[in-house]
Length: 285
Ligand code: SAM
Image (cartoon, rainbow, N blue to C red):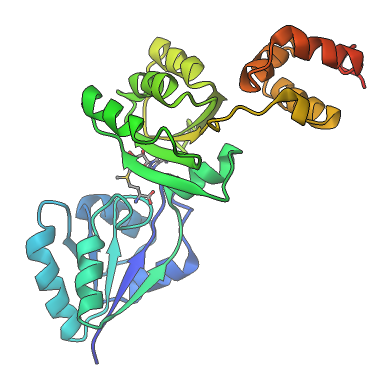
């Protein structure tokens, strides 16, 4: 009988983030195809799994795919893992999965951690519709061109970014996408996990002054091309938004200024309206 290819998600930091099923499958298969055998070796040693491993990475994907498919043909079950998270998501694996499917082998997901979904789930940004753009080009001109192509995009956008380029990418996002709110999820599930939110300009200057370490996902909430009119919002909704900003650490004055900017409404007008509705006297309604 032909073998099965299991696509197994592994931790993105904390070694405890692995499912019971993933551990069982890693222990039961005949071979584990790893992005980096030494890296995965540490995970396997931690869980006392002694299944043989073989390397499968971007530089040998072409040759290795045929070799692994032959093993499936001979009846071996294979688990595919990457260094972290879900294989084939901005990681090696796509070619092998495709080749296995084309030859009619069963390909089965063993779901688990994924940096994109983890960042989205804690971002507080709209999740009903989002677009994942992978890594933006490293070269500034190409990056800016890619961002320009996203100007009319209204979905929440997610990018991977290296700490080295985080500040300049955020500056470009500020300038080109006119995004109002950005979240950077850094080192998720690790010791120095950090979630920061603010305007792209604020976060660009934060990371310029203190260069971050480690891995990061950037979540961008796109401004709609037509800014909302303050008049279209109920008093209750206005108040809810102000309180939300205050909870993020802004003073009431800063919150009003920021909301006025988001709504493209003159600050004074918004202030007067809130005052009229007694929304800003001591923060009480
Ligand atoms: N396949 C992986 C997944 O499902 O999460 C993604 C692989 S991609 C090559 C690696 C990128 O994911 C990193 O450069 C970083 O942007 C992001 N990433 C991975 N682990 C992360 C973590 N613990 N915290 C924040 N970002 C992370």
